[in-house]
Length: 117
Length: 109
Image (cartoon, rainbow over all chains, first blue to last red; front, side, top):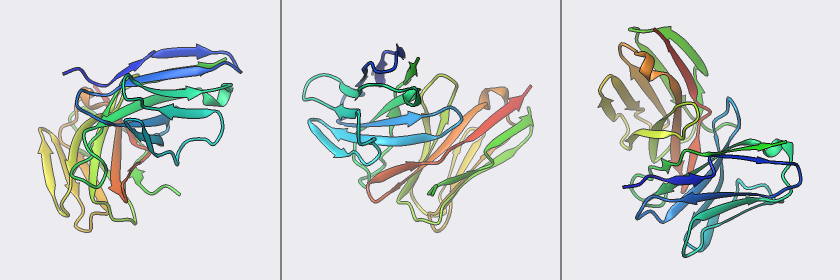
């Protein structure tokens, strides 16, 4: 079974450009989470999606950030007009079930390290 | 406000020593997970605890969930350099999963 796939692993963007981060969940998982991690920090929840639905985006900045999980294809985290403060590691996780039902263990991808120059 | 407090933030000990790290909250969680993250990689799930007072063992690692389901501990016996990493706890409450900031553990050979 392939694990959670994320690409690219490293992404360099200049200020003002767009960053698109992709995440393919584990086979059979229909729940995807995106997190941001700054150096020496824990994981900060951004958004929780199911196929074609945003369930919880309470951790997403109000501007420039968006996420989708289409019926076909990977989940995409999109950051428009990047700024230096967006530099971080972005992790995607997938789960076979929703929080509150059973054990919502999450399986993480290797992350995308975004550097804004 | 950090809902899950992990302590210590950093711990550096010699190979062969024992250690305990803690994950504390004033809130009740329906389940709690521990993850380990190595540099440049994503977190890897170690264990899930669900029942208050539950103890789970994974080789030299012992995980305990507090009776009130508000806190947890991870005890490592005879630490090895391979145990080096960031240990994260995550609690589930109200359909949300909340991560602590982690304990960064460094085992010296």
